[in-house]
Image (cartoon, rainbow, N blue to C red; front, top):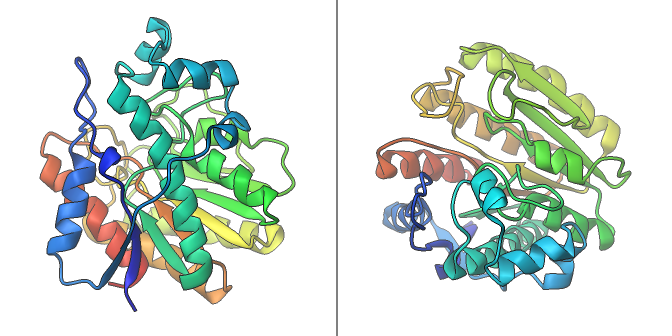
Length: 295
């Protein structure tokens, strides 16, 4: 069965000045997927309605982004200027994560080729994240009657998602991350698993497989949003863990099998991955999507 993949041309925004983020990786992920032998079913999302974004983020901050007048201090916290292209991308990405979730409800799994912007908070972006697509999509899906579990395997804690979804009975958050990595001040997820620097494949999988199933059992989600960051890799520029490439694939296949065994739809967002070689970073993301989709 083809893997449903969500992509929008707006994901590939020109790099703003002074940005350290690799803006071309979303286009490279698309190209590498197209060049692979995997059977794929491509979908283009609608931009997320402004009201759905404002249900999670401060309307004043949403206006600042849309009107490209984000204050300098917030841009510094985000890590790059919010240009018109960045603002359009920020509207498209949550729509992609939401569409991936709707496709997963029909097909079991779907992937967004962007997203996982888990550091964005109520009234500001942070850590290369403008709007929190995971929280926006989860909030909307919960309003539609779903019980949403956000599983975050990025090397950095999903602090924004945890803060935005705190106290919800219909949304739960799980984050397994390098404890000493960014952000310095952690939020409180439903369940946090902080790992020591240098955690390898075996220790990582032991921590994941002994913590996540119990939360799935207790919370009983009807849908899982998966932040599939590939920055736990040992060579990642911003990671502090020591997973091998094979270890990342094992992780993703295990998460997919957990969801499948319980009959819970699984939608993935790209998440973090950093390095000087954009093609190498993109290849890690593609391997993740194919592992999750069984390709």
